[in-house]
Length: 276
Image 1 (cartoon, rainbow, N blue to C red):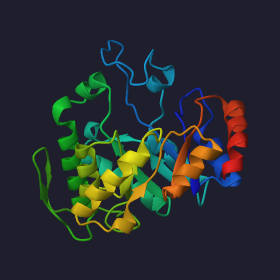
Image 2: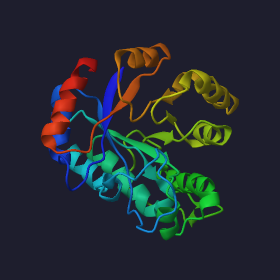
Image 3: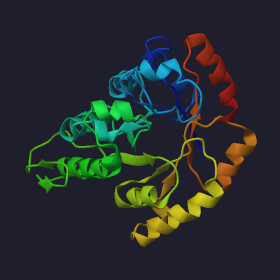
């Protein structure tokens, strides 16, 4: 099982370059970065984990810029977002960013997408909360049109693009690997089966019950059962937990690193090294 990591990189933490080099040297499989463009001070949406919102949420580095730095100083380390708030982006510009990062990294990019939890942040981007999932699906379809081998037009409920020349293309052809984050449920599993390569469940709880439901939705959509990928995300590891994931057939798990300065992060990497 591949052991990857995630961290809230900020202006106060270890740098992307230093972390990426340390991860590759230590044999970790990948680095996934979260995204928040801003956190409005006047906020009514509660923090999903309860209590006060940790300060790193309002200080996150742009994941695509940080991952480009990481790509430049590594050769094998996987690079991904966990997650990109797809509804908050212009899909034409985002398609170019994604394809460029995948191209310059030699095909090492994984696009993790999700729907967000902060209504105020989304509202400032003009996102209607009730339709954010449908908007995300529409934007993914538009991006896939731009990534197609031949100029392909797309017209959806929320956006459109003319048949266009749009290069570079993702290295693997068609699209980079796409994983969808979110809580288990029929609507989420329908979206995963529609346009993604798999699921990125946060924390990894309840998977024994939910994985069969996702596999059923996947197969009903006509997808090859052997291609579904499930990547538990932001996991605090233990030998028993990782053994359970291996028994479920998962090939990758993403461990949570603290949003701290270099010395603290490297100490945690030393404790995680036993799992690599």
